[in-house]
Image (cartoon, rainbow, N blue to C red):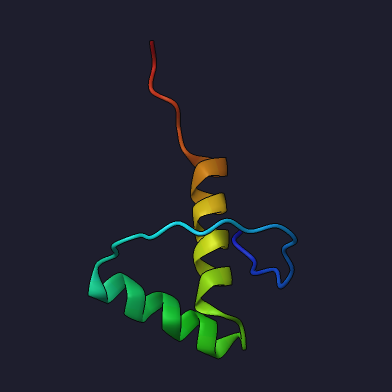
Length: 57
């Protein structure tokens, strides 16, 4: 299950273009959990990367 965490240590800047509806959903989640938009996006990406199914070779 996906659970939000509140701490991170090291950052690097990278610009992303995201669909408006995705931004709105992530911002709503951030607001509900008193977190920054950035922290929510980081955790969503981490979750996706940790749970991606590798294609068969």
